[in-house]
Each structure stands twice: as structure tokens, then as C-alpha cells.
Image 1 (tube, rainbow, N blue to C red):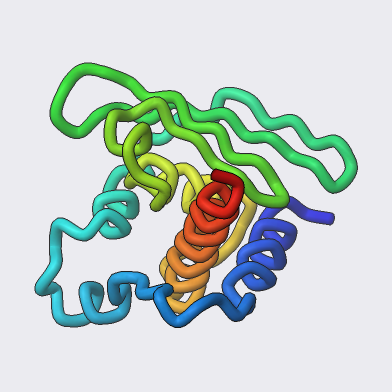
Image 2: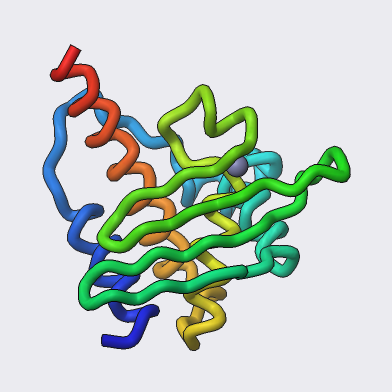
Length: 149
Ligand SMILES: [Zn+2]
């Protein structure tokens, strides 16, 4: 199956999972339309998207691994992002070392993968799906780790 479609199906499946009442993602739509939160992580990712360099794509049946390099906004550093389908993500930036939620580099890479594979990433519904799918995945992963300890 085409990579963009697999990404969309994966995100849609995860976005649709019912989780506990304590799941409260920050409002992507609010920050997008009201422009109140211009420094929102997702919007930063959207702006960074054109600077993402995809360095390796491995597709093995239902498993895919995408490696990218994304420049830091505030320094000359470059971070390494790894996105796995169906789903996981990592970034070497300081934010990602301390948060479960996706950083701007992960959003930027996910949007770049979709764009390169012909998906209409300017469509707010797809942006919402990227936001919701990645955040809900992060929430579920954090909960699972909590349950183990
Ligand atoms: Zn990052």
C-alpha cells in the first residue's frame, strides 16, 4: 500500500481509540484558527517541514522506518528523527528526551513524508489527524509505561 495511505490509516486508527477522561490534548484547532498560540508545537513543525531531509526509507511489508534530519530552529544543530509504522517516533532533540508528546521535528517529518507521497497536507483535516494521531499514540505509550512501573 502507498506510504501516505498507510500513514493516514495508522493515524486514523489510533486517533479513534477511546482513552481515559484525563486525555486532554491542547486544542490544535483553537491555536490554528485563533492564531493565539502561534508558538504552538504543531505550527512550528508545519513551518519547519520544508527543511526536513529524509535520509532513509525502509519498507518491509507492513513495517516501515523513515529516518530524517531536521535542523534546529535556534542553533546550527541537526536532529535525527525516526518514524516507524505502525507507529512509533523518536527525536534526538532535548524536548523529546523529556516529553512523550511529539516535538516539532516529529510533526515536521510526518508532514514531509505525507507531502512527498502526494497527500494534501494543506487540508486542515489531515493536519488535525496528524496532530491527534501522534498525541494519542504518545498518551497511550506513556500510560503503558506507567502501568509497567
Ligand atoms: Zn525533536
